[in-house]
Length: 490
Image (cartoon, rainbow, N blue to C red; front, side):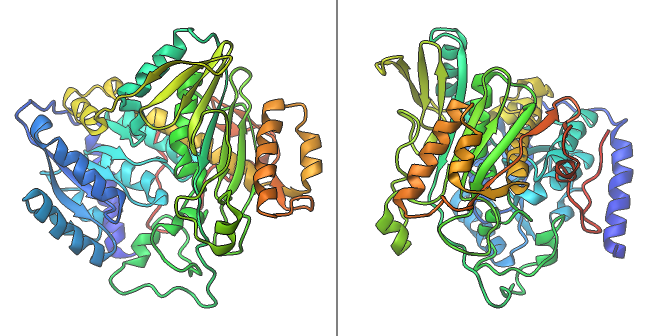
């Protein structure tokens, strides 16, 4: 470890020890809340919008930005001043912000593999945290963030904004009131066309304006053979979690909320593959995840190829038709099947209840202020006030991770064999039939061993460890690079 990093780690540990005995300051209504936003290419820019929208109502102010890409950083500093008429500092290394007294909150919109370390270090430095979804890169990390939030008495909100939407709360209340009967199962969909990220002959050149060592952080520092550094990290398991953990985490969270599950599923399995092209990505672009809760199981479908064969062949996938999914659910949504009807959620805040004959019963809509809810809790010091407390963020994120673990441990099998093995699960079989029909329309042959069928992994939800696979347990955590180790918090 370099001298600089050693000093930083030692200083953080010392601050952590002091923090455990430090009284928590309850902010008055007139006390300004200073916010630093980390990760400014895309989502972080929206975080600046969120905080700025709460400037008058919550006396919250963005005081600093952090971004490893110097070009993006400089542009965002200028954009912030032009858009909101205030100046803020910009740094490449977020750690330079942690000891600043004018920063009360750290808002994290960096890459997935950085979420846990940034969140925990911010809490150890005395900051409250807003962290984007998924909150972690693996199951173990998420639990450490929860432990840190409770140990240091910090307010930590997850970026699953549907939890603050009035329309979604109305749908949840309607279903939980029993007006459609008992919930039987839920299906989440992430039908979102994703083109190839390319496969280079030579490693991607990283410009000097980017601190690539810091960008990699806790992940392995490796050469990249895709065409761009930014965003496409989602499709590399070294840094991302595929579309299950990218877009799908929202719908996984909503499905779990409807089904009222408060822990990881006791059994999970996944079927899928990266199909249609060969590139530098290794996450599935076509996938089913089955969380086999004894009551109210959850199914999740990822469809990353368009339904239109001509668009597929021409790689012109803008606004691609993704083909049919569960009834009355759009390309991104959740179906909640009940005894006497179902709820179809088609966004973060709107949806419709139907009876068993498909007749509309009632529609719901209404937005909310997720950042405002977080800032209210920052002032009250009551994490119970949060709409998306870190514990909820951890459980929903971990459901994505365990699904990916089953996928990664899978072996390729022909579709008829997969069909035969899952025929005892009619909802899963129906989901697989939808996937098979979709791929057939694109002339993708799955009659040969093409799709990976993962094992059914059994888990102890209390310990958050698998009980039937040592290999799967090794994937609950990762190997960290020296100087970027996510600490264990107890």
